[in-house]
Image (cartoon, rainbow, N blue to C red; front, side, top):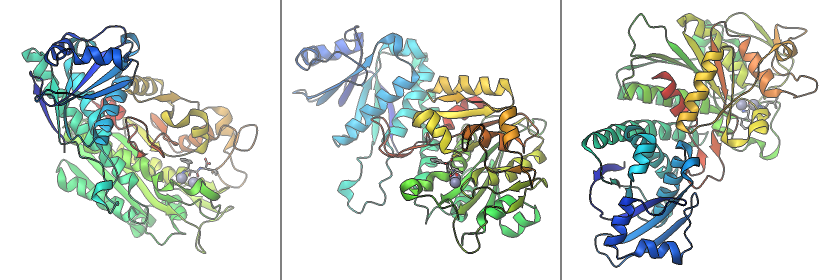
Length: 495
Ligand code: BES
Ligand code: ZN
Ligand code: ZN
């Protein structure tokens, strides 16, 4: 765990951010003086122009400050929260790469003024926490593991209130960052370990750690009793027992209607009998990251003691081929009695979500927001740095879009509508689990959303995490694997 401190003096390895075209900040100039002009010299000799992400590293002769890293922020006018997180994250990963586990970051007055001390502290800590996380526990050689970031100091000339607000922000950012990494860890864990049963145990662990969280886990007999025929259908080809996990955080008092969060918890998606070809099956351990997001949001919301009622509903199972698998042409009956024709066993996420969305009615929710790694189509449309946003309520959509911008996550509003709703109608059941508009697979992210919408009768939004939930290679500011997309947006949305 990284320890944070706020300091006035330059000590240790220093990271010095510089805006393009603005020269060294007042604070950086002071450090430059202490280092006999080393920073100014680096700007010239290393051709350092402060372009976003540009870096220049140097060891020094100074005992107090053994090394410095100049880092470019790009143009002040282009510099937003997303850029801040990228630059800070890249510095952390850069330092870990040099086996430096303790360094300081110079915060100029410009940065404090731009974002406000609390927001700056919060986003900084989120960036530091998410950048320093690595899923390396399965590496047998200690040397091959990533350098832990033990201490991070923030250095500058802060007023008393700026210092307090920075501290408050950092404390909240740590909580959120830990929740993001918790979700990433659930996602990164191999699917032979991260089964529906372990996911349920992890939820129960959350409840043990924080007694404001209550967890109930339903197993096959109870799931049967609730007539969740879609969850049962998808799970029947696997030796792993399905789980329906209910997480409650009631911080808002008895009169407040809850927000229900629903998360797709497919712990491995082989495609079932409609088995995925070649390497399309790789990375399908991440197909439970909707569930992981719900758990991460509730962990954060409970740790921050938000005065809100939040319920998490997680249908979880494996999608596997076997003699007992559900088949194309089967008709499954959901919790609310609606029937579904199976066209393709690989369109399983919407099925297990249907049972959960129907079950959510029981809570008389203010609104329901679901998270799911639902469609390859959404990934084709948006790539891996944005998630699709769908819903039946303009104000929820607008609010989610605004909050995502504020935290530097990217949501993109995509449609539901009549043509998609028409397309999913079935000849033999109420709806079918796969349809296109104008051609096979056309509008696949929207027909999937329309399918979910069929099971809702409350204000609702759906976030298709497609492949925005992980990165096979990683980025300069975050390592490969699950990235925890959406948790921070939801925390701000629920505040
Ligand atoms: N879990 C996948 C969606 C997915 C694909 C997420 C790639 C992340 C990356 C989902 O269950 C699925 O398999 N969808 C298929 C359905 C189709 C084959 C009927 C899809 O969208 O390709
Ligand atoms: Zn699938
Ligand atoms: Zn899936």
